[in-house]
Length: 618
Image (cartoon, rainbow, N blue to C red):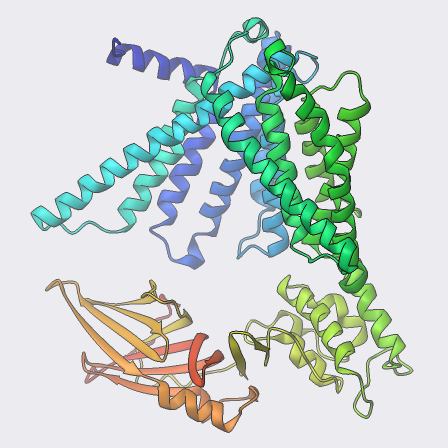
């Protein structure tokens, strides 16, 4: 096999750039913004991250536009007009993104829309055509090209990373770990995209005439995918029989198992679509029809499982998406059973429409979920007669069953997790600042206390098979006493079985890193001049045991308390004060350890004069 020349590769890259100018432009913008963002503090990088997110959308949106206009629009003026509209939409998206951390709602909405655009890309050049063969071969090329691009990118990244590692080890050249991240962005962002685009077919009419079917694809489907589908089918039907025999409600996670089975089955049928009518493949045609018939009992099982959760706990975003996927599965199964056309394009087309619809309008996942959860809350407090004449909750002298308190506490947790606890503000007499305060951890508990409610949640003071958990929270908005300290750092530490990355403070010529390993704080002081590192292990076992023994069920504190303030002295010449806002303790087999903790850390240099507090690390 003759290898392509450098000139041929350069010409191919040039042709790809001319064919997909805006796709590659947004690829460069996104990759560049993410690389630059690595050099900024977290509070300065949101505009760059927003540009990166916009670029991710720009890449796939402009690809869809290029494919559509290339196939259906011959007028160059109209092409550029459509491209311009797409780019304007992306600029508007950039300015609509928040200038601070993203909410869960926004992340889910962006992901679902991004997924929908990928589905659109699968049929963009065949949107107004009923070309089954051309549509299948186009997507087969996309699928193979994507896997090939990822393989080449991974090999390239692995090889270059090992080269950097070898230079670091052999020549004592200190290579910043961020360089590996930059390298991954360049390869998986720019090279991967460029290589993928270079293989997109240009002659769509030629795809209609294709008859070749990859033997490897048939082997993969016949001996890997279909056996997996059969295994899932046997498990699910056996479980359905158990339900009927024992008359027990299905477990919640069976919904995901049914969805996995359905996705695998539909994917397998899509892969073998071109050869299902061949004389030697009659079994494929039989399997195709049998699959959709076998799907209906499982769809009923899916509806029963999700219906029970919805009736008991209301709708959440997860249940909403499972529910609409169940409805979609029922519709697709009916379509392929009774329709004469049976176009496989219907699958990505309907799914893409469903993704956009599910995250927009009053019928969207978030609006429906919030109305459902708020309805549960209203129903519970009204049934318990907890409202006074002003319509506010007043439960100081009332006994409320634990089951009810657990239910409304879960609703409060739901809204707090989504930073929308103010949705329940109509029922509480507290100042609006509580809902927006960044210093108050677990606002739901504070909200309940203001109305005489006993806050309960499965996340707090819970006992599980793995042991007990205790939460401690300190409500204090400052200011802090900073005399004798030079640096202030927000602290969020999480335990892992291995040392995690921890958090860093850049103290002039030294870099201080703190990590949490069970009941041990690990400090690493790295001298940037001498290239030396000193580790120090400080046990906090005594402090947490005193806290757990004094307040065995968890505790919320108001103001600064001695139990939540630790003063430490490092041998490397630093005084440390840790002010804890929150702490999660876990007890397993009578052994208590810290799972996570958060607050502020003050760092002072010993025997240093004219100290000033630096907030650049905060």
